[in-house]
Length: 244
Image: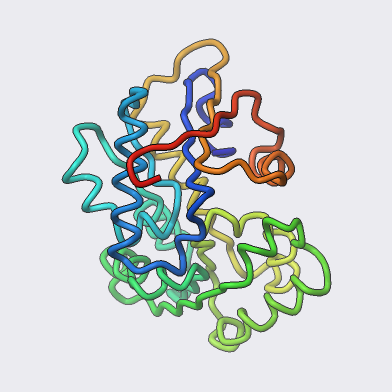
């Protein structure tokens, strides 16, 4: 959302966070598809003119279901992220860190190989990074130890490009850059997706509002949202919808 706000400051944005049922990264593909369809239908009632599946897990396992069911354009984060990685790599060795569900789907590997058949990809699930990011532990000894463990195989394989395959992971960019060094390009799928979306919508003049809908309102939300958005959102509503 931070990347979209930066590129489309004049476009009103609606954000739905299914905070009552996260994390999606440990759910079955069938459950993720059901949750994603319920969330998208809620947004269409607002009404939304485009749906961005900003969750990598949803993009990896539910994007086709969303595109088939919805009457508006649907944009995911996997394809833009994979395209950016294929452009960035010099050696063809590309690492991917993501949730367990995203890694199991092989969505990033397949998308990268469609663009760069000779690429050598290595994906690693990183289940501890989401709770660490939400706790604000992105640059301490615990985060350093977790990343050192998750990156060990990727460093041995000498990847020169690393895809951050979860919307929480950009918070670890400074530490990732320190651990991997300047020879590894970090690909933020959110930035790549925002570029795609910006090319498909009219950038209205003025200041676009951000309206946030949540299925649960945890007491830590304002603090967590500030980390991801750069500032706490002004318009926040707790909602319920079919299945939510």
